Image (cartoon, rainbow, N blue to C red; front, side):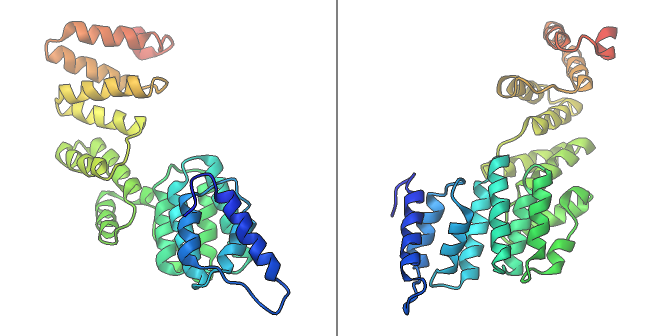
Length: 279
């Protein structure tokens, strides 16, 4: 097994072996059992995608299986726009080589894409995945979770969990929708599930949760989230009406000083706000 940071040398070594035998009477095949774990563990988003494709095609096991493992696991490692761009290049290179993926894998990938923050590059990757010859058209016909209503989202969550698939995106949407509808008990259940899976809440999610707690008179929880947003997301601007609602709940709870402190603090960054001018 290769140590972290050695994947570039590992790929070069495999490429040299392949090139040595290319054009001779012997062909070379690589063992997926040895290559894939090393490749995935030490994945480098700066590696030449063409070299990766060549190696995948030379694996002893069916190339489709190797590609499936790589596409599913590497997508989970994509945490930035640059990494997603690399992933797009990899998918494009595989498509040029006419390497297909099966419908189940396509569904995993599409769901993984939908769990990430929307962006043009995600749409481009999704479009390419749906174009693979081995991909079921039904997978691409499934409505995006953002276009589902509450019951549809709940059913979609059940389906994903039954298949052991990624649920972050659907949980995030469900939490936001139930927050908007004031279904605090369901919000608490979903948030517990979200945390148990190791997912991290964004500033936007925390704001929605904070307001749901405010609307249901859960002052301590609302204040805890307010503090968390200020500490962990200092540049995030909370909607001014949510700030006013928080202050109102504090006043309702006889915490006048705390309410005034929050309003004064927030007013520093909202000098042009009509709401804070009135205050």
